[in-house]
Image (cartoon, rainbow, N blue to C red; front, top):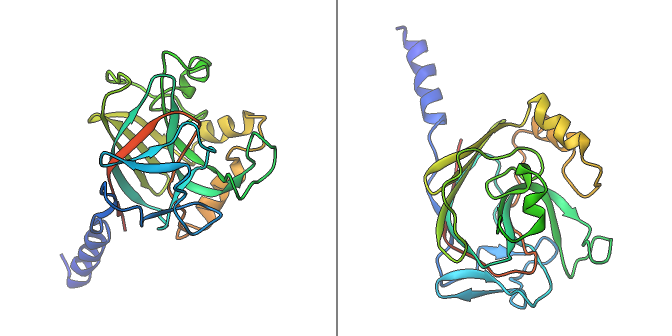
Length: 238
């Protein structure tokens, strides 16, 4: 191996290394969180509950956004939902979308437009029964999960999301349930087939490809049920 080849290999190897872990939820602080429209934590919609960040079911359904921005990353966390709950973690969040209750972008109840790891009570929420791409573990609406482990409601589970270039992975309780290629014809077709205007579209995929260095927030969704998130940490992949 020549000296120049060794230097190139060494640089590539270093470039593939993940960065340090950054804690997003430690059970004590909400400093890593805000909304997409305001720089403060929405304490009227989310609270700290026994070491977790919890969506208040009777509150306005405000989505919760990270302060930090991410493009290629690994995200790990614990999650739990109550019976009848619908939640999820959105990533590569491109913008806000209209609040479905009023039909327009609402800075008082910001809602996120991005890709989503769906976390839902599959047995009791109607949306989960529409199609496999609506259920827990899915890249919501665009790709169904496979090999799901048992995920009873009211119980803590582990999850991991990996985004690395065009590749996305969803993991639940140590099982990889989804691997998606964001540049695949299948994902593009699934987005194009959705009639709703408040969902990611092929133009968003084009943005990811054209601007690979652009970073985006991670968002916890609020759909009116009890959902808890704890022990959340993230590290960037360079």
